[in-house]
Length: 306
Image (cartoon, rainbow, N blue to C red; front, top):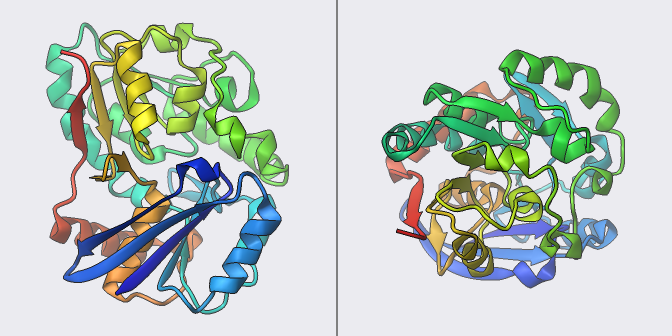
């Protein structure tokens, strides 16, 4: 049996282990959270290096892909600097390939929406979702400055995101990651903020932790596009009135795993052992697209409220 392990600096309460059939192989998926302890995460990578078929980096990113440019997060790279024998992915491959495929689903749902407006909570982390919303013809608000930096200034064009990334990410990438993103127990805390941007959008796309943390209590009739959802997340969305929940990764035993976990599972099943370099990954993305076609993976749609 192949083994793919996601070591996350997120909450250990979200840990899960399942076994799936993938590309004709049996694969064991394991998610291990360290509750924000980056030293513990680095230790686990060292201990399991060479003993598992693929690693996923959870609760954080090795870098951010904006358009065709890769921005490494230097404060995170130390987690995996001692890994020598096991390929490491953080989900960027599936964010660049699988998440773009949600555009077709959005085009269909748009027929029943009052208006084609969308909020992408953080485009620099979910460029594929941003492209999907734009390709589906939505008027998009990008919340990168709002929800990552606490600056209530919405952005409205891909060009503005690329410019912001070029100016800020070389500096922000050297800050401690927890300054930019909730880690550990903070991932389970609600803190509704700048909710008017949620209220103005018919569709909200982005990282589940950002959406859960900042959305208003009333989300009646809205569509959420995300992943890494637990049954508790789904119940919160249902209680708030969300109509449709779209997860870009499959729902397995009641939850959708993160892109890092699923990307690691694909590498493990395929027996791909060479290191993944996201800075020069065009060939890797083409390979992933081919695997996704073979697997016939597509976004999963759940109707939470009729």
